[in-house]
Figure 1 (tube, rainbow, N blue to C red):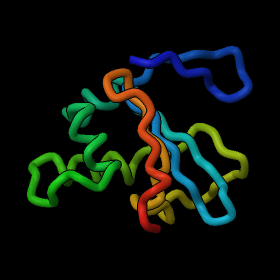
Figure 2 (figure 1 turned 90 degrees about the horizontal axis):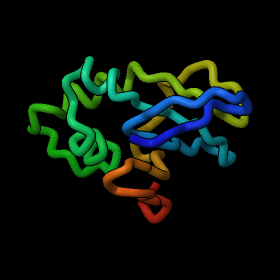
Figure 3 (figure 1 turned 135 degrees about the vertical axis):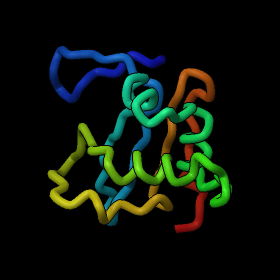
Figure 4 (figure 1 turned 90 degrees about the vertical axis):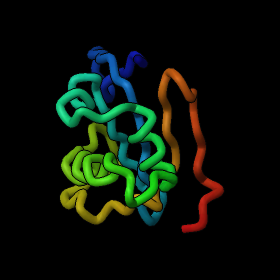
Length: 111
């Protein structure tokens, strides 16, 4: 797990996955997945990371669970307030961080 500071506060939490989504105009929204959240969805970190990288096969039994978590999860930090997170596209994930993988930068992906 990774210790993550919540915004400009002095509050820290332990998370399993951190991922960033870049919007047009380089707006950035940060999302986290706690171990409890992943347990709730019965979702292994590796499967969700593959989903975020767009490498998880659509036929994989975890694909729909990953998509459900993706759609339900809300960002915790952004440069601008985002009202409608349903506009986020999986292809806009720009970075994934886990204890196991370290920081994975996806800026090279075609948008």
